[in-house]
Image (cartoon, rainbow, N blue to C red; front, side):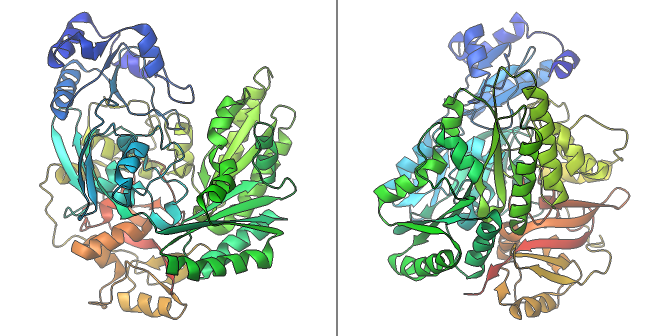
Length: 623
């Protein structure tokens, strides 16, 4: 933070503050009070800093004017919404402006028939849910921080939540986003735009590419019936095997949540979780839908649980469900109120690797038992997304170094298991140093080109996500030029561009993870036949024009085919056009918000960013 502030000058001067004040119609929307700046400059968990001033715009035009002034004077701008993120992703400081969007909190339109809503960036997730409830609708992302998190915050963090297993993360429910770039110009990015998926790149970009001014979200009906089940298990392995068995049954639970023995015992110190203290792990499962669907699905899930669990609980009314979920959902508030030092981690591994990750975390806890109290593991078992929360005594002089070492070990273990450094919390400043472990120099360089294409001055949320530049990063100017062309709305496919490379036609299914890894040159017919023979399907594999390769389909995707690919694509092995260096963006993890979602550029990219080598998709069991 201090390095960036030095590069961009010292404090924001009075003359510049006056310019901002004139744009906002008076000093009532400009705050230089140090107490307010300090309070608003820190997030829910206490991380942050103190900017030189805080601006509260009232509409998109004021935001555009603010960015014009900031650009003219080279003043960094840090956007703020509900400040509920867990990655220290908001770091205002000297020489910076804190842009508080929380006052832009209007729900502009609810289109009940079209199942969509238009909202301003500062609308709080739970407020939107409350407004939609009377229409029998909801916005799918439901992070535990929904009472704090804004919709724009959901967008820039690609928020998930317990029910992302069935309904997807924020990316799957955003129809369009209006943004203001750092030079004051505005853009609207839509899910159904032709060409590269720029909206997908913006989602999860942690406020570093543009200021969100309006969001159009997709809505879904609230299920008629939701029942909850809990299974207790003697071992983490049996719990994970049970999760796999439930998913392999063809039932798609609305949620599958995880809490380990150390988590239950540790949280029990702060409040009564209601969970068995002798279980090595518990799994909470929601089954929802129509009464008929739940009547079909619940017995299947319950049978799988009773075959493996040491105890099964079933909750079919709201009071019982609230009691069953209380221990899991109350964890973040209780952690904060515990008085102990704590750190909430976030790693994702392929589903079948959860027991290995669990073992690695507790081995880490044992190694650092002299300096740390315990590590509780909660998380979204259906997605392989785990949250190891490390507790320590604040007055222990060895705690800080032990915490850093433990966190490093946990991230290294996740990467060794084919996982990623963050599934939903984001990189922020907390995991910035791990980006070079997650990505190669060419992959970092491509992401840096995205940042430069959106805002070359580097004014938006500086110091977040991308690591410092390394001399090992190659030149990716061609890649960046293609991003700029797409952003300018002048993207023109090159009819002779190479779409695929390597001649890979392999097809493989990971049934434990329900993922498909396929060579880019495999034909749709070959893939469909392979999947059909194994009782699974992939929504992104159409049956029309089946002689096409999957790489051609993705690179030239348009219309409904493009939409299906957007929702199913997990990862891509590609080349980066500058030098055709190999790179991988995404992977087999069901959740991955590390860095910019660069694979999205290759959807409808017509080879402009490089060629496709292999692709990874979500699959489902045939019903």
